[in-house]
Image (cartoon, rainbow, N blue to C red):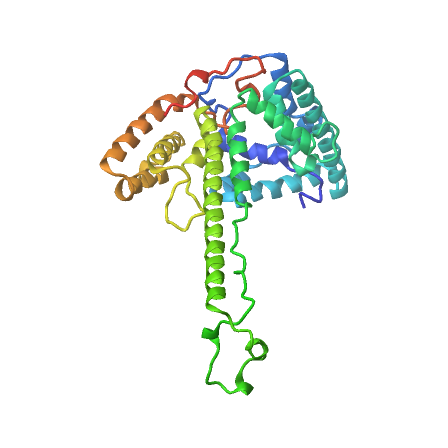
Length: 388
């Protein structure tokens, strides 16, 4: 029904997030920029419009029973209770489903148009977070056709600009795109061996009656290979196989080199404090059949898991259920030698000391306030971008 009403129910879902997170959620620890006009324009782009605020006020707050159902039900089903209540309230407020749909569509068009306008104005003034949010917003299907939305070429150019000026959220996105592209790279295949222009006597049955000899063999029985022809064919076949093995080895080496460059992009995001990059670097390589192989080497994997364990604790989740700590224990038991373990622990301590203070938690931080704000801003981590 929500889709039929023409409302994305953004307000309802935002209300759910407010209830779950609370109004006093702490900001991330990464340094945030002081206010400036372009930053304020970026923030305004994602604020409620007056019409949207008026609609929310008319709908009101969900009753206690809906809140309890939402909080006591896991996953999207809990939000479903809030959505159903919101749908019924919209019809009550506007009198009918058609009227609610028309009002919702009008608010949506005005909101999206204003959002893209504000973001583009701030981006054109050189505000990097606004450029980032404009790229990300334009990637959503519901913004297609709206004035100000970016096309594919403009988005690609914007990503290059953002990366060039060290915007901290971009390296992880580029690294993931890079890894995705690698999955589509085709491996070389072994083509058919070069054929013989004669019949190998070894594969003819000298005692078989003609009527039982395959027609193709009967046709060529008079053209029997000489020893020289067989030796030449064998050499061609070996050269063919050798060429394939060499091509395959080159392919494996090229993919490995490209994969490392992809991972370096994600590492760069991790060093700049992007917590999604930490999560990615602490994950496992699902492209291999070997069990529990991280996408980075074990020593480094252990260190990224340390940051994930700290994130787990910051969410007030108990250590006894901590997946990152469990994965670290598995690395200690099954993969790391004593020397490697000492190296991993030292690296983990350094990551916890250096990178944890830089963390950018997008559940709490406003992207519009992230550094750098403008192209001319200094890189806050230029001197120690790779602390390993």
